[in-house]
Image (tube, rainbow over all chains, first blue to last red; front, side):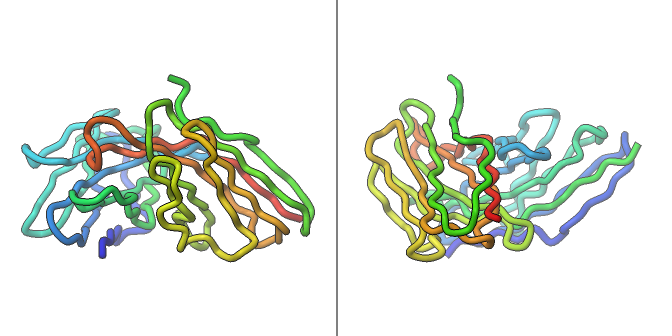
Length: 114
Length: 116
C-alpha cells in the first residue's frame, strides 16, 4: 500500500524568507513523487516530480524538492517566499510499477505574510 | 492543448435531482480519474479508467454514484438522486504518454456542486 503524510496542516512564513513544506511517503518499491499546488477556486496544478536521478528536483515558480530515500521524504522548498505563493500544497506518490493513480496527502496550507 | 475540460463549472440543484458532471481529458491521455474535494475529507479518488475501462471504483460513495467513459475523449459522473452531503468540488484528471507511470496527472478546473 502507498501513503503520503504531510505533517503540517498550516505553514506560515514571512515574505522573503525560505519556506519548507514537509512530505514523507511509504511505498513498496521505488517511488515516483509529485508536488501539486492549488490556488483558491482552481484545480490542482503540477509543480514538479521526482522519477530518478538527481535527488534535487527543480520545478515551476522557483520551487524545488529534495528526495531523501533514507528518510523517505520529499520536502518542498523555495529560497525566498512570495505572498503569491500562498496556496494549498499537495504531495503525492506512486510506486514505479503498475499504472495506478497517485496517492495524495491531505495538503498543507501555506500562508506567506508580507 | 486546452487541458482537461469540465462542465458545468458550477451546479446548484435540489435534493433528489439527478446531476451529471462531464469531463473531456487531454487528447492522447489514456487514464482518467474522478476526485471529490471537501473541507472535511480532503481530496478523495472516486474512480479511475484506463483505456476507457473502469479499473477501480472502490472510492464511489454508494450506488447513487455512477461513472462512464464511452470513448477516449469523454466521461461522465452521475449522481442520482443527489443529497446535500454530495455538495463538494468534483475534479476530473487525466494522464498518459510515453513515460507511462511516470506521468503526472493533469487536473481540470473542477465542478462546484451544491445540493440544497
